[in-house]
Image 1 (cartoon, each protein chain N blue to C red):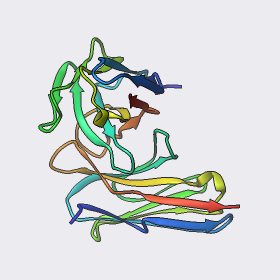
Image 2: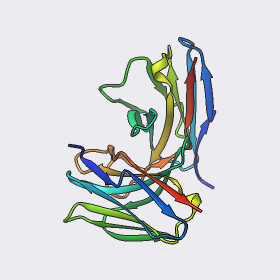
Image 3: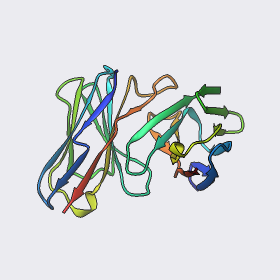
Image 4: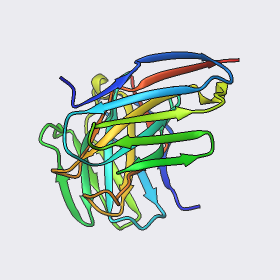
Length: 109
Length: 115
């Protein structure tokens, strides 16, 4: 079983829809990252969370440490949001990032 | 803007011909990481530097080496690239190794093709 599970694996939405991507983990962590990667591109860090909620523009990330669960929300989705969204956790035991398999989001105009 | 820069963005090399990928940072972070990401896979950590201290992951092939001549620059050397080494190579930096304060900042990556 992967230590970091994301759902869904693939998500197709219409422009303007509200998007939610979920991440569950089974290990002790010190922080959780949400990352964005466009096809063939590098990685952009969207958020790092260790508790609560963060908001940046149309993006909102939440984390529940007790339930070992995080969500990434995109409001008023746009075709330029189409990308792979990756959840990665920083293990409490060491410095390493453990990555989820990613969620491929496609937003159609 | 402070950032992580990788050059070149695209690199083509021949089978067996040594290649060097470059990463530089203006963040003055003391940790620099190199990741390998193959198609449709998660990034895999190859090694990292904490200041001048080099830390190799146990399963990183000997074919991969790294140099960090100063705080700002870190190089990935592939001594004899094989077809299986074709991948996106990502550089990242952080201001420390562990703890919730130390976010990793990623560069745009170098896509390596081996012919």
